Structure formats: C-alpha cells, structure tokens
Length: 153
Image (cartoon, rainbow, N blue to C red; front, side, top):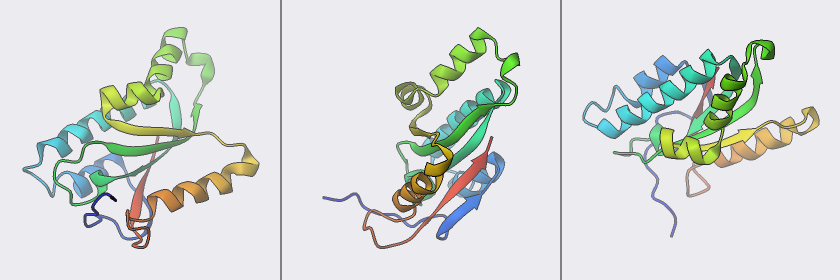
C-alpha cells in the first residue's frame, strides 16, 4: 500500500530558497504544528553547524515537510558535493564533528533528517541529479509532479 499524498507546498521544479524562506514556506503557515517548528529548528542547527565548520554544498529538501501534512516525521535531505571552504582551517575536532553530522544514522537520530549524500564524479553528476529529480519530483502516485527546495550552504 502506497503512502498517502498531501498537497505539495511547491509547484514542480527545483526552488532555490534560503533557510529563512523555508521557514516562511513550511513552518509559518502552520502555527499549530509544533512538529514542523521542531524539524525546522533541527535543520537550521544542522545547517548552521556545517556552515560554521567551513563546509559548503547544496541541499535538496523534500518529503512530507514540504507538503500540507500535519506533523511530518522528518525532512528528506540530499546533500550534494560537500566541500571545505578552506580545509587547512579544519582542525581534527572540526573534521570529527562534520563526520558525525554527515553520518546518515546520526543525522536521522539527532536531527530528524532522512539524509543522503551525493558526491558524484563530474561525468556522473547528470545521472545522479536525474535520479534524485525523479525521486523527489513526483508524489507517491508516481504521476503527480511536485517541487522541492534547494538551499545553498
């Protein structure tokens, strides 16, 4: 039995957003949904910690968090090509913290992220992006197109 689909918050396509704009889209319109606020705060902390550690990349966000579903369980997240701004400034302690943040089980347990990381070779980027666009760009019915968010770190 497939999961039920809820109305999407974004029209089909990739929508570049700031973390603050994500709040306006997925949290502010649902003032009674404390789970949404909790998920957003966890994501914001995760993003801020990576940025403060000197890590950059692109996040594709999707899932029930970007629908009208009440009480989404997590945020679906694909982190594309993470890199250091200046690896010379990354101490062993910072590298260990980043390694934890990018661990799928840790990201799910601590930050409620259904987390995947992609770092394809240049000749595989198009293929991997096409795969994820197909996964994120449609509802569970596999017919109805929907959008997803992209946040730059």
